[in-house]
Image 1 (cartoon, rainbow, N blue to C red):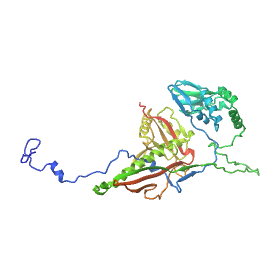
Image 2: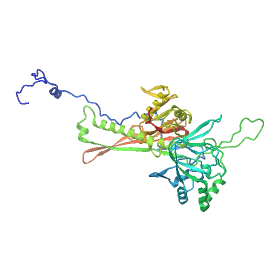
Image 3: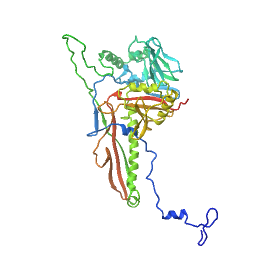
Image 4: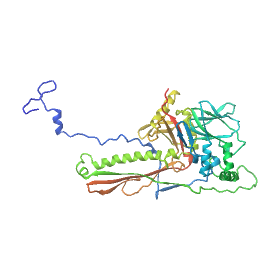
Length: 468
């Protein structure tokens, strides 16, 4: 606009007062603090009981248990062909602690692939068990006979499981249940005949099997722990058994993990641009938020101490129909006493809600710090977006008993570290470099421990994309 030109409104009339655009030059703008989409509710960090360590290490002492190697088998897929990784055969009872790679490779080559359609019977109750089945892909149901002769589902198995391993050691073994494919299923089959042929030509395998048969069967309780000899209900003066409680000779130790970053702030920014908000404080606040998000992610997914990777395989169950039904949640609850909480991806909670809607069920909710949290059987279901969702739109639901006194799951940290701003989280000044940039080292120390195996359970392969 040229000097002396008359200002007009949008309607073309002469302006009679100061406009808002010019007035803003003299006004103070009200600003928000920097916002961040990554910030989540982080219920795991808020609900996990934290135990302070001394020395950065936590040792979990347990009673001696003889159940080892009860794991899952990993496969390699090339096109439509599946092969078992030879070392993974060591999960089978007959091959535990056996390490001859050449022999294991020969056994792996003798595994033959077979596909089953949904509803097809893989193994039939009462028939001789001459083969062990390695489940490469799919979901199968173990079906037994109920008390009145009807069918009863004993369990559901999925990728990486195996069944029929008694066939390798017992020539008189029979199938004590029927195995039926619920989905398109791919298995690898190792027959006892092939196993015996390899053993005849291998001195190391033959010696391993002879040693295995020579070891007396250990008396254990249902948890695999060495049994404590007791006598009860007796009268008179019988001999009272002698006993002792044995411990694991090499208990597991959890070392604190670490998450770190170096925050850099130019001195000009730190000195001059601090009104109305301090730049250094806001930079540190957002950095700490990101660090806590990564901390929760690691507590869920870390290969060493993450909850999903530390759940025992006998505490992992499969949904009977793929979707997370109330029946599956009840089964998950039944695996442990005093379950304190569920953790589930928000999409898994929505899928569970759809199943409740189908049955006309309305879950109760509780107030937790002003938040309405849904529950099942009185156990809160906390959302956790760190639980992964696969490309096939499947995820997991975690159930936990927590607390050191309850022999549950605990978080580990070490308070009192130098320059601490929160327990086990510190911000340390690292100096100013020649480019006038201030450096701060932001560090968090953390880990998690499962005190006894049944404290943690997982409902795996939960389908969240099925509607109707």
